[in-house]
Amino acid sequence: IYSFGAYYSEEQTITVDGKVAAFLYRNPHSFVDLETTDDHGNVTKWAAEWGGSGRLSRMGVLPETFQPGDHVIITGAPGRDTSQHRIHLKTIVRPSDGLKFDSLRGRNPR
Image (cartoon, rainbow, N blue to C red; front, side, top):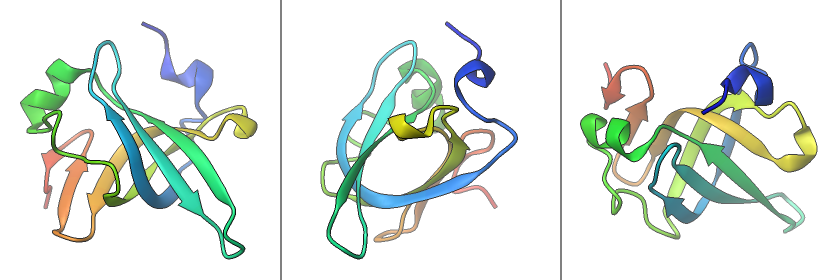
């Protein structure tokens, strides 16, 4: 396990809006692989790093919670190497049903 601060600019926040390509539910960290499309149709693949499966299950996130094709909006800390298109996930929202997870407060925080 490593310090997120070594790989991510934790003092910054970005938002990535796209479709889930894969949800990798595992330890020590899970990943939401995301595809974004710009106004010109160019696709960029992002890796959103999240907590391990044990922590996520305690928040109510299960392996089937996010499926390929789901539209999600992720906020978090950008990777220090911006060419890698990585983000340390802080919040994830699925607009189709309002499902939201906050890494600090859990499911659908108020």
